[in-house]
Length: 358
Image 1 (cartoon, one colour):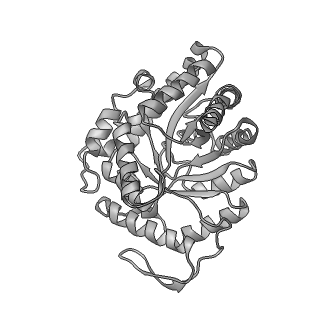
Image 2: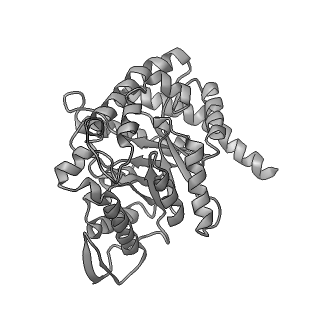
């Protein structure tokens, strides 16, 4: 199993300036190479404290490229519904060049109604915009002399520049709890990034993904990344003190940002989202710990927690860790990263080596 770090800003300007948030985040990125973290990932969201500091993942990842020489740089994820494919494809090629070929592109449909409303995009166009956008962006990245006539974007024959530095940029699809999203990722041959936070039946959803992957004729079983909130500390009580209030505030912020779904918002492209957000309203630190979606504790406790969740979920390849969620101070996040990297990650490198030897 590999481990990386994920940045999902959830702060207001009156709590922490964007300058300070990104200064702290980039200092955490500097720890990746020395402590065994293999990727850096960030989101695309807008306008509100939940994600609003990250309207452009690729800008942040460009800065990360200068702070880590090894970590893969993953959009987690870009939103085709709000982007012109010509611009996004060119920016991906540019960041891939700057990073010497370390970019991986995750795509998501977006799920917050307020973003659609403010961009003037119909929620009922979400699936169509995602499918068309992914098809256009990936062709522009992978091929030369591309022409496409779409419902939302069309362009005559052209070659996007800069061309990618790596031979093949890896693609990901973000999925939350909709079975069709996991199946679509598998059919497309994309890796899948998912979030146990909602307490969904992850083993069933990942099973659908892997079945769709194999049925489409792709070699192997695909690749799965799951996201977790993580605090590692020598003292269990101290780890809980750092994580509890910050995770509870994060969950409340998520639900508030998505509250349109529980206030009567409806869309054919988002069946059951009112139920999903209503369920999230009941989540808190204790339920996240009980379900295994939060990794909080001492190094020894986290070794067992990671192994237990891996078995419960049916196996996954990559864990993407939020280490400075909500208002966790830089000092606590850095201590946590260093301790997890030195005391937890080596156990899983040993597991891989032992499995290979057998």
